[in-house]
Image (cartoon, rainbow, N blue to C red; front, side, top):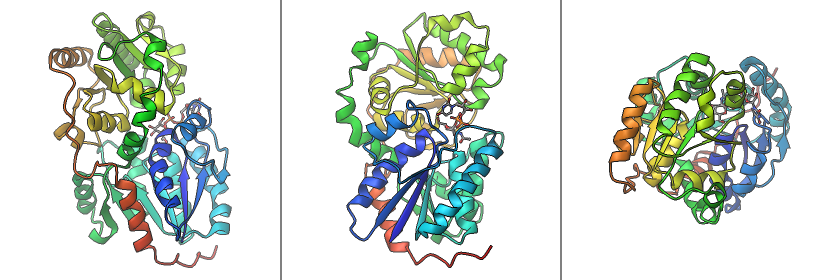
Length: 369
Ligand code: UD1
């Protein structure tokens, strides 16, 4: 059976790594990796392939940045001839980035079967580009591999047939557990002169957090206030860096801004933090998996299980609310004993690959143009 995985951006690489490792163990599977190049900087792409021990991609499309339409369209154009040539039994996509949508549309229109890893998540906020991507991918993918019961419920509510849904757990946790021993060897804390449990980590990159200067200035203001209590370490995504460079916010000097970090250094940094403040989806899950307190600086989450069963609190973007939630966090005991949601056990990739190999009917004949 031939399986093509299409990845494009940082969180995709983290989800692909355990699946690639598992597929390499199965003699009946041939795996081909296509990297669209949505993320192309070494700090966002190459270091992840290295840290996650991913083999180099079989195809690198070099799509790069652009508007959503440009990025999606260029990916579709570059991908189509490869999929026609490879004729995989499955196209595997993950998450909710533009590469995920582009690959799904290209594959289903060619009559190829698509499996969506991390299906069913919904923020119910259509202003998020990722929400559009998730809804569209789940509407047309053949096999919906979900991380949690709430995702199954979302899909069923949308009228998805139960036989298209397979709960496999959270594959990011597989990556996390495999990488922990190697992350422990990272010297990031020594390099930054930080003591475990005595600092906070911040990440911000969503358009809703960083694209509006008023919102961004408010968030930076709140973080600068928190920096009076403990050091705030802030690895800055390129989108955010561009916005910060154009912003008049001298308080940014009170935060310890860094370039983006690789997977292992960043894992070591956040797992030892007293508190994480973020707008990332993946980090909400990862902090839950290891019992690190997390404040989500958004008004919604597509990962409610991290709030119900984990260490996440959705606090919004209001500075007073952020500061009071952070104070409450700092006043409560730490570390927290992690309580991982069901199937967040490091074996999701085994279940994903089992589902692909058992559901893998031969690809439908490619449609005529
Ligand atoms: C993308 C995903 C988002 C995911 C995030 C993870 C979409 C719609 N968004 O957001 O869901 O959480 O990745 O990081 O797919 N840039 C660089 N170097 C790079 C890549 C991007 O400098 O290697 C800069 C460019 O200026 C680009 C901007 O970052 O315009 C945004 O990149 P893009 O891939 O469009 O979206 P992200 O914000 O990274």
